[in-house]
Image 1 (cartoon, rainbow, N blue to C red):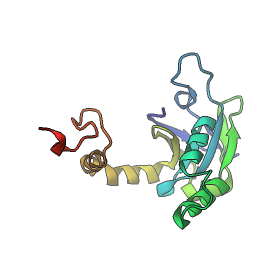
Image 2: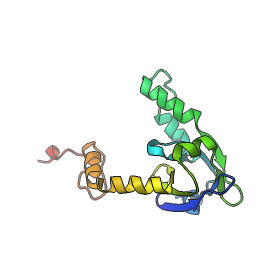
Image 3: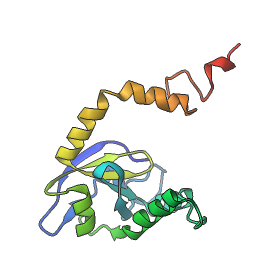
Length: 166
């Protein structure tokens, strides 16, 4: 599980450190992750997955269903075609390829965001703008997710419709 925010800098060789907290497995005794998949992310960021997370995401995207509808085929193509596997160097850094840096508008100051099943890499200013815009709608987002049937801690709605109570 990926959580937290970590500000780092992109160096002159287009490397960025992977914060130690994001490389640590939450499973006791598991090795530290040093291998990641990076690809285009939504809202102008990069999505970062562990190899296991990448496999799960590919399965969820229908990797075994090549005749899916056009939107899914487009998503499959863009995400898979722009994916790179990157391994941390001895200092815990990974190289960010030019196409991915351009997509995310990465210059020098970047921020890693934990996004539960993946990490994201954002340009620091782009993240601040995104967060400022969306944090005001946080309650509304919780409500939408809750109505869709997802139980959120403390929401009192454990995937049930209120009409289920008698």
